[in-house]
Picture 1 (cartoon, rainbow, N blue to C red):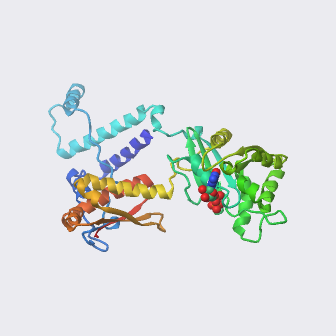
Picture 2 (tube, rainbow, N blue to C red):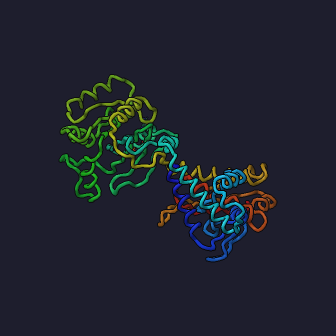
Picture 3 (cartoon, rainbow, N blue to C red):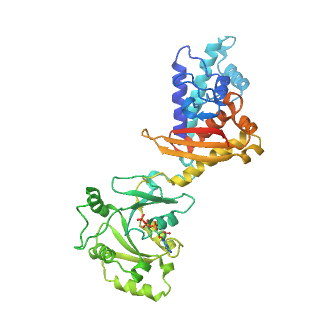
Length: 418
Ligand SMILES: Nc1nc2c(ncn2[C@@H]2O[C@H](COP(=O)(O)OP(=O)(O)OP(=O)(O)O)[C@@H](O)[C@H]2O)c(=O)[nH]1
């Protein structure tokens, strides 16, 4: 990774070095752009002072900071004199000096890249592709069986599950669990039920038919049902689904039967009755009695799944976040910037609302937040002179959100009076 970074630096340096007459990037220009949040004068022109709209600003961040030499120039000159006495006395023009400096930066970066040890290349939480293990788990079951709740519980709050990100046309990623070198992706299999004859409702939609075909592609298939409901008010379609999936083993897929919502079953021996009812189905390798909501039995199930993972590069970013979590993060990021830039008491009186969250066609995210203040004086402080304060907050928040969410973010902040 570091080597890659060095390479990027090298490329940018060598580009600058080869462009004749190219002036070094001036730090004060960079600072002014970063901190004064000047609206772009092209496009639609500046907008009202109390509104920050990231599309009206040129957001820094894509510019690489010019790397400066970090060795002592005095020592270098001494070495130069000792090693290359013929150069002694020759004075260089500022342009020549600059070009020599750039070559030295280039050389030093090359050296750093070459000296990089393999162990240094991985950051925290990163696993080499060749060491990564993966498992695709499909969860099938009637509506309300508890598929999402179980995934949420397994994935946990840290990485916040239930991403509704569409992965294929027929399946949605419910959540991603990444632990050590192993990643387990949970997929929903929407709409898969059986009609009376025992086969899928082929006529509903081609989508559902595709879903049936691709169900076999998961490494593990969890067939889940609400055991409490089964005991109190059994549904023949659910029994057919369980039987159909359990009748014939698929050599390429492990199937497990999960009796969910055990916490609602008062007499635990009733659970054994249900287990007996389905025990002669050869395709089920294991039976689990769980409560996806309360967590009982989920640890065993998670461990079982982790053990099934095979060497295969991860497909998903290890920290897939749910939309709910991302929304909260977006509020937190702006709030943090508010606290950084505005006098401590002011932000506490501000009502902070997320009013719009939308994926746009180009893949970017439009986030609109309102900062509602009860007093005109507070509003003035928040907006700043000519919108400088809200602009600064907006630019910094936008940049951080872009990094966290790994995509373009169109942030709009409006300062309103109650
Ligand atoms: N008591 C209890 N309730 C549960 C359990 N698991 C899920 N539930 C509840 O059952 C309801 C349905 O849960 P979901 O996780 O949304 O079910 P689902 O299978 O994803 O539902 P669909 O999205 O309609 O397919 C929710 O109200 C959950 O709180 C459990 O183990 N115990």
